[in-house]
Image (cartoon, rainbow, N blue to C red; front, side, top):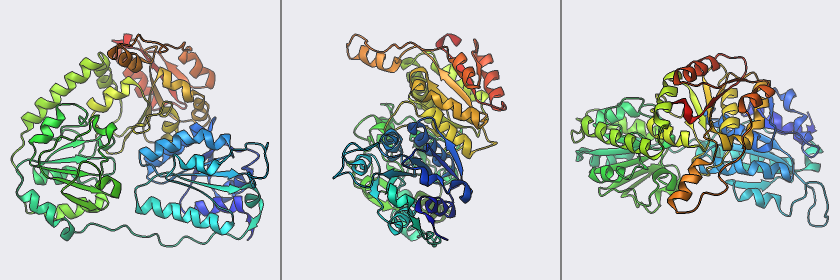
Length: 524
């Protein structure tokens, strides 16, 4: 039956598997809220559109499904542009639906008016378009979902004029069978297999674009060593003897890569935030496997380029090398020696954090999903904290925005009810989105929030000192974080020893509300 288009859009999303929407209603987008409950979708009310966007991001990373957010015209869309930018750089499927004014060229002084709202969102989204009819709205939503499946997942923005949202419309078309990605088959990897057959020291670099859980078996079968990007941690599980870990940014990793006689990079962009240097360091032939043609044609200049999803590539490679004898050029001893050396470097660069991270890891279940913010604690942990499962540590790697951890962790916890989810944030970044604590309390989330409080922007202070700049504007007055958490209705703990921190963390996974665990460098 006919309903206002705003309501029909919610029904369309439900038919395509959307069960949660994050957002904030306003007078300009209230028609989008008419159909949410009727469609059987849960709505999570954020305290700020930035929080709503990060929640959608965290939900998408936890589920692999698109995270959806509803926001209003003008300031609502502007507020969510930071999460859109983060989702773009980290390849997260997110769909942001907003209202927009019916006319902006011939009228001025309207509520929430912008000069060009669509273009503004287009600077951070994969694409930003306006739907001027019900048919256009349905077609654009369908296009977004198809692209999430077929290509590198990135955020999309669709805006609909207020009058269109209010106007009656026929229901959206029923979902069609989604298009299928081009899959890699054993014949497609023949050139890769041929090079592997000649290799004594094959080296794989696995990124966040890898979705297969078979990498440990594949690497063992090939006798291959590996690195992972930060986003690829856990792809080979823990304790694979030829795993150099997520140590690509270590300068010494370039020497290791140069010693390989074949380098195969799968689902990794190899951008600045993956390497913190311009060159990978390889001297041997380079093979790239990725969905994104832009990655395949970058300055690293691969000898063989295969546009395919990582899962089908892994399966084809497994099938094509079942009878291959493992290479014998790598030794577990050289890998362990390199990792120990790099771990010492990490500890020396940011002293005192490594033992705290080790203690925290021991207190968390192996299948915990962690959302971290831009904080020194996370920078250290991402290098020394081995993950048992892939895609279980999420960080705002590319855009690098403060305030990500808490709301993204809420989105993840909503998606993972009954499974352990945790947040790691720094004191300064926590200020950006700490109001979302109210959401976590409302939802009754058993969410440990590890708040690393060194009383300053320590990473920036250290950078200023290295640059011979007198540290300035790096200290801000903090509240009593424990009392703040309790004011929201959360629990809190201020452990004075590592053992107390571990006990508080374990208890937080079973608490009926989130628990803020305030940790300072004095805990050692």
